[in-house]
Amino acid sequence: MVHFILDVVEAADTSGFSINQRGTGSKQYSPSMLLALLVYCYCTGRFSSRVIEDASYYDVAVRYLCADAHPDHDTICTFRRVNRKAFEQCYNAQAAVEVESMLIVSNHLSTCPNDKLELLPSLDAALANAFIVQDVLADTGYYSENNTNGCEARQIEPYIAVGKQSHGILIETILGTATAALLPEKATPKERMAHKLNSLEAATALSRGTAASA
Image (cartoon, rainbow, N blue to C red):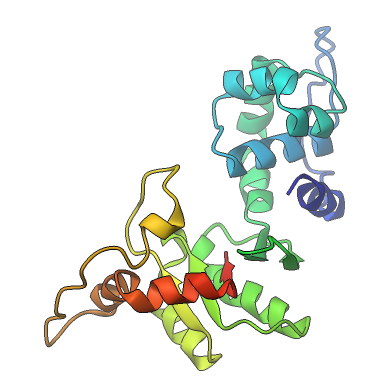
């Protein structure tokens, strides 16, 4: 993941990012390094500037991203606050990733603030790279009826979470473990997806190791 993030950030236009220009004596860090640091830490569930600062001392991947430098929490917080809009756009750089081998099959930069707009372009990029995608696993941020229909139109079976899950839960404990209740006759698309995630079909898709995770 670290190398992928570095490649994406290197391709991003960081010329619009602001840094400390006041001459206060604070150490200067390149926008690319701080951006890569934030994206990686967000992807690994670390959002506090103090937690990110601490990680620069003990986390090997973070130390690699920072070239063994240690931005303090004030620097991290200020960079994030001043460049919030640009950071959020770059944070929405998405990849379609194969669950079993973590093989990156596509990447692209996006200015879309909403993850819902990222799923289908990611799948199209993977298909354009000649990868065969049978199933797609995605978190609740990607759920929409349009994405469900778009996957089916591409002959890809969607398994998209419709509600938030606690962090740290193995996907095997989410898919196919509950007894799927009978669907009401007029179930909504969201209810049908929730029912599908609780079916043995979902567990079978995971066991194939061919599913893509957005």
